Amino acid sequence: MDTERADTWIDGAELRHAIRADYDAVAREPGRGFHFHTGRLLFALLGYDEDWLGDVPERTVESFAGTGNPFRAGPLRAGEHVVDIGCGAGADAWIAAKMVGATGRVIGVDMTPAMVEKARVSAAEAPFANLEVHEGLAEELPVPDGWADVVISNGVFNLLPDKARALAEMRRVLRPGGRLQLADIIVRREVPRQALHRIDLWTG
Image 1 (cartoon, one colour):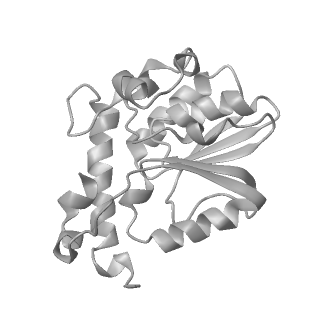
Image 2 (cartoon, helix red, strand yellow):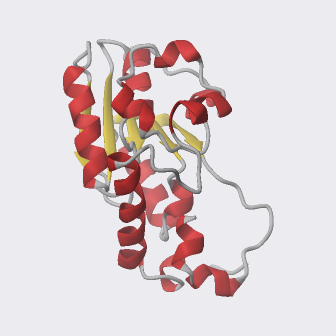
């Protein structure tokens, strides 16, 4: 088995810059059209319950760009603490905040400033006070040790060059017995080594 780290295949800073550029556009120009689905259509394609979206602000809905549905692994429970890694404009974090209720808490983390700003505006207008959004990296989560009952993420793990470090961070913030609910892209065939050096293939 090849144990060479992904950050030897590609420059992590360059990759983050390219990803931020892509998702900055999704935040600022959600109707522009992208090589991936976004918004309300994507929620339908991924099997989200329409009732979950009832009060999610349109600014958040329109910039949704996930790859799956982390809630298919099971609903969140009242009172749970949840971290949403790569929360984007905050749609999954909003849904999570409603699921865990007033006794629970949700921390959304994203590395794209425009997405963080959008998510924070929506959170400030929410009819609940248990959601906060921070700018940060999956590999350096701004969350205390053992704080979370659940870590969710949607379409982010595939973009991380250092997956081992990100998984270590997830483990750090989870309490003993906590769980991961990740939705992401699965590659069924080995990726050619030369492709691992191409930024456009990582981001698209």
